[in-house]
Amino acid sequence: MEEREPVEQVVARRSVLRAAAHYENRHPVWLVEHALTAGWIWAAFWILLLVPADHYNWHASIVIAIVVVAVLPTFTATVIVLSQTPHSHLRRSESVLGHFFARFSAYVFAFFAWTLSVVLSSTIAVQLQTEGHDNEVDTLGVGLQLLVEIVPVVILVLWLWLIFRYAWYLSRLRGWRAQPTRTRIPKTFLTDEPRTHRLLIGLAHPALLGITGSLAVIVALLLFIDDVTINIV
Picture 1 (cartoon, rainbow, N blue to C red):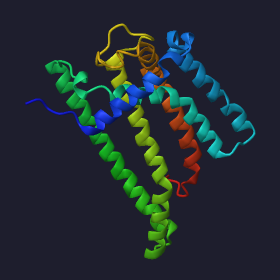
Picture 2: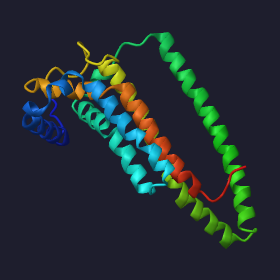
Picture 3: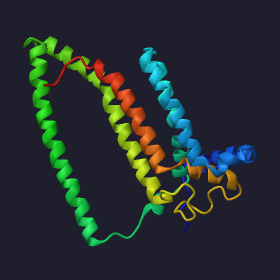
Picture 4: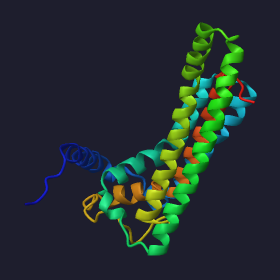
């Protein structure tokens, strides 16, 4: 019996098809032919605005808006491409050596992450006691304040990991060429809208997404990092 496609995927595909059909004949020729170049130009323009933003101390919300706009085209194209690509298209044959090396690397990374978490937990516990003057209520208050302040930082770090994962998926699906001739993206993806198809594939480039997305997260981290009131020594 043939497996039915999830409802959310059907809705997403129809939404993409309607939008693509609407804008198919409205894309400038140069943009379609040089989508990746246009993506780099767009990102560079907005990133350069960070120079006067830093010099004139623009509000943090304006800086956040700048970095979001800078990464928006490539991120939007990436979301559309990945949402229309089944996970099975990422599968490929793996050697025994590669399989066990990947597992070994994961275990090593997990060990170091666990060790670092133990050290940080101990350090934070001592620091909380110091800041709370050994008073349970004050220590709890300081701990809750730290938790609230550090949540944005944790979310941004996880978002950075998501950007890297998306970039890695793109590298496997469409490669690193500006306009790839062969991809793992479904052949049915926007077959009736070739100009929109070419534009999205060009913008959904792993390097463009990785660099602009990383920069956006780093800028946001620099804005939030000063809000953490307890310094871990």
